Amino acid sequence: MSGYLKDLISEVKAKNPAEPEFHQAVEEVTDSLEKVLEIHPEYRAASILERIIEPERVISFRVPWINDQGEVKVNRGYRIEMNSAIGPYKGGIRFHPSVTLGSLKFLAFEQTFKNALTTLPMGGGKGGSDFDPRGKSDGEVMRFCQSFMCELFRHIGPSTDVPAGDIGVGAREIGYMFGMYKKLRNEFTGVLTGKGLNWGGSLVRPEATGYGVVYFASEMLQTRGLSFEGKTVAVSGFGNVAWGAVTKATELGAKVVTISGPDGYIFDPEGINGEKIKFMLEMRARGKDMVKDYADKYNVEYFPGKRPWEVKVDIALPCAIQNELNEDDAKNLINNGCICVCEGANMPCTPQAVHLIQISGLLYSPGKASNAGGVAVSGLEMAQNSMRYNWTRDEVDNRLKLIMHSIHKACTETAERYGAKGNYVTGANITGFLKVANAMMDQGIV
Ligand code: 2IT
Image 1 (spheres, rainbow, N blue to C red):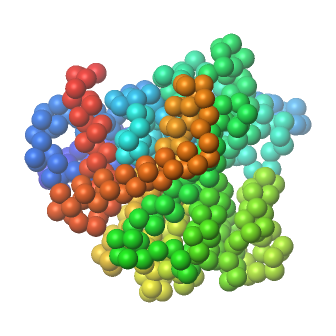
Image 2: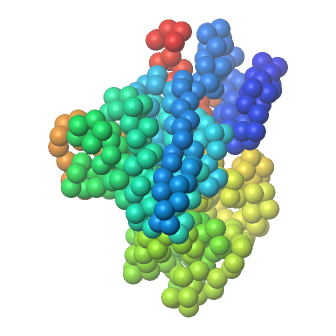
Image 3: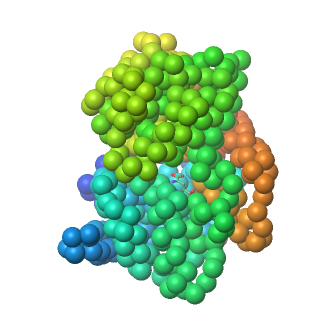
């Protein structure tokens, strides 16, 4: 890495202490940019990278709420408005005990590049809270969401910042937040995506992230004349992304043999299909955040405290959370003959794991490219809201497929142009960076 980039990373670490995930995400992107900055000295002269790394605005706020016992609880809420060069801030809201300023900054940073890749006009943002939805009653979740929106509403809007769901935030939470926003603003507008179908939501939005991951992995496999047909697949997580990925991979003739939770993973040698896929939704709705119930119900093996990467599979789709697949996991996958690791979560592979997977010649895609289908259909939801119209399922699904195809094409072509053929990390980072950087250049020093 050049002295300039090394100094930049040191400065990011010194200026943003205790934000390890943010450092990791910034390092991953800057690693890809050496050549671009050499060819385009104007970016360095305009301090584009320094500006992209600094959020346009960080909002941190108190979220007080009352639990079912009548006690007052306090959580911390955030919204990171990272970059608005190519459109309004756009990105999910995460409710999870692991949420910190640093983890949301990493997610908002990734989102900026991801959204640029979708071909749609969306800037980057992310928000959330350290609120733990596990075991909370419906009333508690509603009161929390309402309190969260009582502060957030003044910072967002359909042309300013459009949040959506993420870990711990699904259709129910979006509904409660939308209700409070509407009451406070006296305005029915597309301020959130992932809305219910009969009040402004888009068909295929729930499935979009997982479907997109599988569409993207299919494109990757195709470059080697391969497909999902007859392949064995390991999926981690059992939330929204995992559910969509299991559904589509199964539909394309693959056998998905694992899903996982914070408690461990299950191994279903017959494949997770039919009614068993529906049961994933039921497990999620139970609010326990455990996957063991699947093993009990379908009488399959359950591995407490373990992750699914030790299973022999052809394709691995990590769809749970950041840094869930480390170097040892990567070794296991490689030794077991895995051919493709396609990220459904944001930054699920550690840098050491990514390095090993790449030098071993496996197909590998970073989440910012392969999981962009979720936010892409959020962009389509925004378009439908603006038109006050709804597209059919096929219309949205076809657009999603087309977008995933475009992202794949952009990544492969850019990687090749910059002398890194087959490297989806380089391709995604450079493509996303150029779109955002050029927009920033056009708009002056703001
Ligand atoms: O990580 C992500 O891309 C999301 N959570 C979806 C964001 C969105 O605005 O739909």
